[in-house]
Length: 518
Image 1 (tube, rainbow, N blue to C red):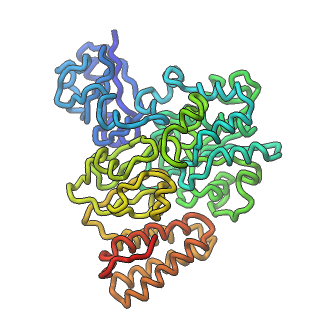
Image 2: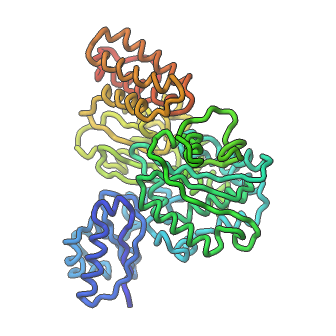
Image 3: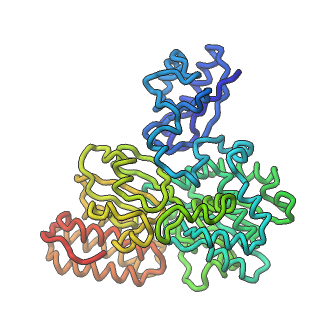
């Protein structure tokens, strides 16, 4: 009887030697005459434990990690095949506190299944949402998404159901579904983990969107820096098409939907939905003016549903379990769960899926274990490179779109980057302006010129050159960028700059804390 052993194929695990561990595992088993079935699964999201090796025993899956190729022989010597004791033994995987304290809805299969096994996917609830959607009128599918309160997980937090309803009502002979997988925010990787670890979930969510809106063609725009995600997703699309989950006749329903992958062009601004559409069409990634909105005139001028990976991936469970089940998670108008990504100077970096309402303090210490350096945490940037720096005074604010907006912060894509007390917030603010200058598409003046002038003004402040008038100038400049930029790149760059200035004035050489709000 063969022993089933799991070694992740996730990019983070590969970077830490997972392929070498897998090869050594197979070689060692062969030499010892042990029959093992090696499965390359996705990551559980506990990156400090990668490569994480799991073995199926009578007591369930037992985890060992982090495993090096040199440790493999000792695992066999100890009898890890039966879950025996070893210095690297972590116990039953599901009992690891980091996982046990989460609410994994979207990521329920992550690290559990073979990403490219349809049998695994279906055995763990896969395509149940699609089958339910096929039983309902299209309008009822849209209503389920509306009733669940699902909001876009890409940053703007716009209700997904309203987008879908707009596209469904539009009159056109061709409609599109586009997934924005150009995950360019610092400290984010939930999209990549989904594409590499549970790609059929995205296929299912996008197909449900197509059924709901009458779209027949879909595109997934993936950043070119994700080669493993691109390869895995392309293979998943082939498998799903062969099995009848995609193509001219989805599961014999008469509905048509085809998916294609498009590799991104390496520009951060192409994460903005209209610049992404331009790129898919083969043009330079430049932001379009709105209106018209993409839901009415999007890809190739046709009605288009645009959501990011986690938004689409959240849809299947809503259809499978019902809108009320999903809406029951969260607080206020923030419903469901969010895959939160801990990165930067944090001891236990990884993915944490929690219902909205968890606090930053809980994430930093109950999950993250404090800073990796052991020094006090000074600032936490939430929501990517254009997110605000959140001071300790706000660490107990519930993670909620409206609650964060009230303190001048953004939830964004759920990326959290931690900085200890050695960080210089004036330099981080300067970096935000410089980043905007480099990544600007150049179409609008506030973003293109404002970011360049912003770098110069911050330099004058930190050099002590007449700082108070320069601070006023910087605030005026940020106000112009906020209200005058064509898209969120220029419009959100003031967030990290003003939050750094307001909460950490000493880093700019300013004596008194600012009392102005972000």
